[in-house]
Image 1 (tube, rainbow, N blue to C red):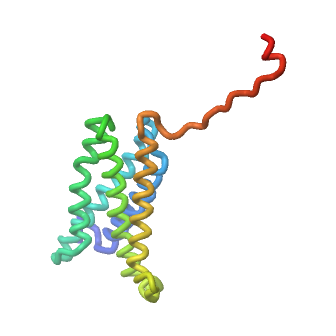
Image 2: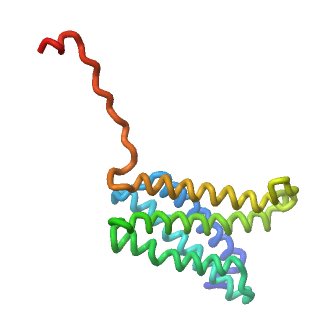
Length: 182
């Protein structure tokens, strides 16, 4: 038992926190904004990802063997420090924008990395997928998660630039004959 919950209940809570963290992280990086309206979704992402990392570490209470998931949780907690500093203390000013985006994308990647590992370990048809000429399905899934995380980071960084996301440019209206003589 962990915090008065059975191990299966605790696992469900951990998985739900992880999945909410992944989904909200994708949305945060897809629609980056420094406006207060976006802070609710950003807070959801950071809180659920932090809670997933902490609950992942708490598995050490039931399984005293240190595993890769525990190492990823510790790495994730280390990434939280500069990410939170960039967002709440420095308000994304100057180089802290890049630090925040890099941290948020890294947190998303680490959370998704563990999700992929767990999916391939627990879901039978994923475990049964044959290797291809490009490599194992697990390796290819991790490459895909990495590529998506990098793309989201680049997208978020350009959207958080001082000018903001690219705006639609309004074309000037063409001159009419009557306008030429005025």
